[in-house]
Image 1 (cartoon, rainbow, N blue to C red):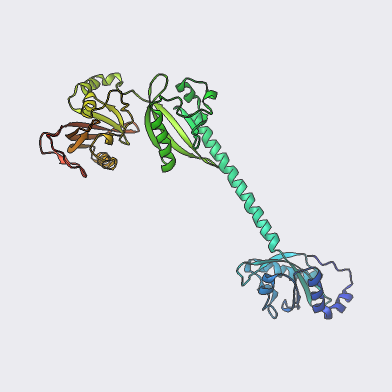
Image 2 (image 1 turned 30 degrees about the horizontal axis):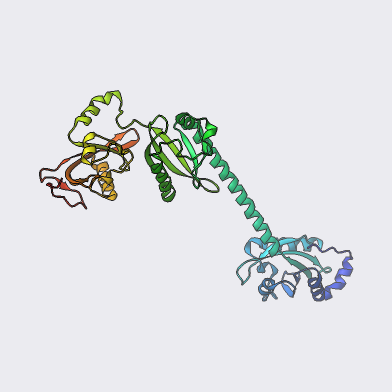
Amino acid sequence: MTVRVAAQAGDLGALSTLAPELAEMLVSVASDIALVVDADGVIQRIALGGGEPVKTMADDWVGRRFADTVTADTRKKIEQLLADVAATGLSRARQVNHPSPLGLDVPIAYSAVRLGNGGPLLVVGRDMTVVSAMQQRLLHAQAEMEREYWQRRQSETRYQLLFQIATDPVLVVDSLSLNVVDANRAAARLFGVPLDQLIGKRAVQPLHENSRAAVLESFATAKLSGRVSEVEALLAGPHRVVRVSVTPLRTESSTALLMRVKTIDPQWQVPEANNRLQALMGLSPDAIVITDADGRVQMANPAFVALAQIDPTTVLIGQPLSHWLGVTADDLQLLMSSLRRDIVSQRIATAVRGSAGRLTAVELSAACLAENDEEAFGFILRPAYGSGAVRMPGIERPDPSIH
């Protein structure tokens, strides 16, 4: 608060003896604290009118240097205030912080006037706690708004870039309704519908009805685990086999799901160069299965279909191999982990549990298959006739005579 003085220097000198009374008067009408400070900057008298924080911090100020009552970072402001008064008799308002026994610093804005030549200084202050708190809230709110703005801009930039560079069909799916909220043109071409007709529709609608339950389960898995979930499915129209990858996508207000659809070769369709290998698999008396990195079936030959007593109408693609193999899903993952390290494992004793309940003892050989950036596993199962197989952990070897 700036004190306006209209009196002459002589008049101020006459008032110097009334400095304590002036301090009390100013506190009562215009300020929260008033100090009488001598020419050496030492506090002689205090008049208090503020709240409890002001009264508590000023208990022991009498006899101390005014500059010693403030925090180190604002001490220079007190020195400047005293220098202004020494030079001109008045000072402009300066805000400083006083340490308080209650824990938080107390901000006070001070102005000062010298009462006559060589007279004491009358320093009056206004508690700025409320104003400072409002300023801090304003700064925090502004910083939060700027942070949210840049996060949103970065998210939108990444999102648009993803759609621009994605060659595979990509859809953004609302995590609650599972409706499509955005899609790229590759998705529209794959599903054979205009882009605007995809928006707002159920994400599983373009898929064959027999595949929708597995994809819905993949959505739930991705939401709960926060990781990518993959499953194979059939399209509703041309019945092409696709791999559906579901990834949680964090936005500024919610979690969406990023659904990528990649076409793959059907169960019995392979490149021309592999026709002979495909024919061999089809004629082999040994059951042969190829799975993805999660242990879900990508391909199986007729011998495995017969061994596992699988109904020809059953959709085999995308089902976990552990459903028929006599191991738990965790045991299968342990085996696949060892295959990543050793590449090949041979003659492991286990069993195949048929869909009709028949349990057949088998010897399993497996290998880790790598193609580009994708990982797969090949399994060969043949009836167990000898005793030289290594037993898989956690599996009781069944009686070979059981069929």
